Amino acid sequence: MDLISKRITLKNVLIAIGATAILSSCVNTQSDKTYENAADIPVNQEMIAELTAPPFVPQPVGNRLAKKLIVDMEIQELELEMMNGVSYLYWTFDGTVPGSFIRTRVGDEIEFHLKNHPDNKLAHNIDLHAVNGPGGGAESSLVAPGHETVFSFKTLNPGIYVYHCATAPVGMHIANGMYGLILVEPEGGLPPVDKEFYIMQGDFYTKGQYGEPGLQPFDMQKAIKEDADYVVFNGHVGALLGDKALQVEVGETIRLFVGNAGPNLVSSFHLIGEIFDKVHVEGGSLINENVQTTLIPAGGAVMIDLKVDGPGDYILVDHSVFRAFNKGALGVIAATGPKNDRVFKGKIQEGIYQPEGGIIQKMPGSGTAESTEPVAALSKAEKLEKGEHIYARTCVACHQGAGQGVPDVFPPLAKSDYLNADIDRAIDIILHGKSGEITVNGKKYNNVMPSQSLDDAQTASVLTYIYNNWGNNGTEVTEDMVKKVRLKQ
Ligand code: HEC
Ligand SMILES: [Cu+2]
Picture 1 (tube, rainbow, N blue to C red):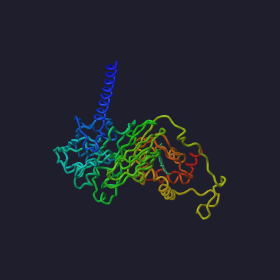
Picture 2 (picture 1 turned 120 degrees about the vertical axis):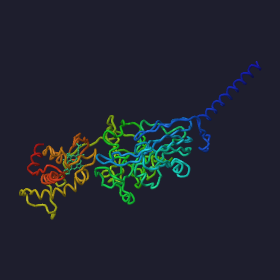
Picture 3 (picture 1 turned 45 degrees about the vertical axis):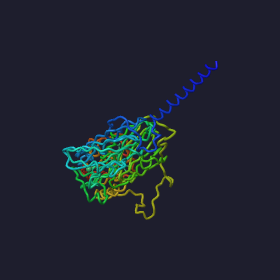
Picture 4 (picture 1 turned 180 degrees about the vertical axis):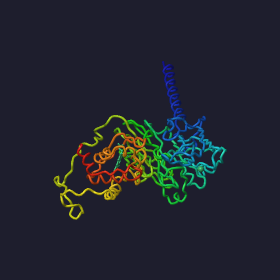
């Protein structure tokens, strides 16, 4: 009995010891937490890195072990569209602006192969902010057209980092599009989310003004003065608009990796209509919560976690907001799914607001006629003058100074086939606003124009001004024409 019980005990003890041994060996192979210094994390096996063009990102690292990761990139100098009708000679990593997204984990050993396409004109290199070493790799990676360099580094610090070309003049190589992001995930990976996207802001400096057609060369003087013609997401005006909007479902968890290349401007990154649940401030380990607008320095990046609560378009902007509406810094997250009335009900009611009891009172000395007698109709010259003022006060913000509009957002009034085809319809739009899809000069718009509170004379004036400028058909709109449309309702 004694002997048997002893044996059993001994067996139990052995099992217990075995289990601990297995457990501890698990800890040793599946976790690197035992390594105080990330430089000591061993790499086993080799892997070719998955690289993606914006706005997409590679698969998460999950809980894979540290590896030797082969990154293969090709520098390409390419003429691409800046916006409709405007082209630019971009210098790129892998043919896109920003360049391919690189996804790694702490402890990976990156073997970086940088190729410079033989058709290129210039030498380039790469400085990765994720590198601990001189020049971020720039010195080791300088490569002439038709050559390839290979250098290697180990990722030590988790975070989202900018990479860029650092060949002199550095500012010019960045201004021409040579930048991207590299993500270093912590041990065990980032918390999983439903969708992840890659966005990078950059400022561009061209000989011609914003929208001036043709191939636009880089303008060094404007770049030195920090006087940007274009401020855009993902290298081009409209890169995240229309059918290129980021598609999500209501309630999905979304992570944005957002970088700012500069070369000059700091981004006040904002999403109209949602709040960022979490922001990795400056791309590091500090997490801020419930953020409206996050600052992204030139040469910096952030990670943003958010969720959209209802269907619709949510607009990404640099909240230095002339950049958004006049220089291109606009993007859209398009959400589909069920409405949630508990979070947002939309417009509940609209009525007439008449603080003075229904009779609009005139301010003494405001210059408006006191008499109730009918005022003589304005002459065409008077309407043109009045119309110009009204346009500059109320329409210019959206339709722009020369009626050119904003691609994909605000339709043009200059040479607008839609405007010239139907005068009553144009009057109706001023009186009552407009929403839903329309096609102007072959391009689709689906946005909202608020109704403009203009009287008949003002409406006639502003439309006469528009019809007699910018290549439109010269119609003179009268107050009677406006009255008729108003009464049709
Ligand atoms: C807040 C921005 C905004 C303002 C201000 C604005 N519009 Fe619009 N306008 C729009 C949008 C957006 C559309 C397209 C609506 C749609 O997609 O259904 C539009 C469409 C139009 C159209 C028909 C489409 C075309 O290009 O011919 C006309 C005409 C027009 N607006 C005239 C005016 C005039 C005149 C004013 C000033 C009195 C004005 N708008 C002020 C945003 C605006
Ligand atoms: Cu370069």
